[in-house]
Amino acid sequence: MADLEYHEMAWAERTIDFYGGDDGDQEVPAWHSAWEGDMDSEASTEVMQLDPSTFPPGTKIIIKAPVCPSCEEHRYDNSSHCHCGHDWSQFDEQWA
Ligand SMILES: [Zn+2]
Image (cartoon, rainbow, N blue to C red; front, side, top):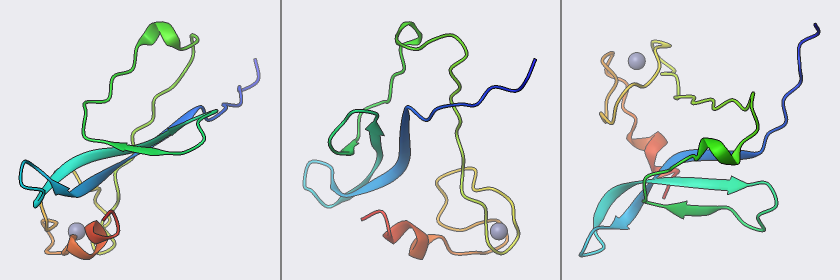
């Protein structure tokens, strides 16, 4: 059987709400996502839930983490620095 092609139904990126928290001055993890048919993408600080009954069998969920440009290991947590010392803060600012 030939390999199937896959159609992208949605995407999401882990972003940062730089104006979160009760006082609007905390950095809060967020998802920026868009689903096929949506007019706009949207940001949310809610837990992303994926109900398996809404997807056809064979649907894949792919999660990709950024790879450090210095040591080529993937970023595995919320640390501001890679274990090699690479500073992620400039990268993180693009999510503002
Ligand atoms: Zn590194």
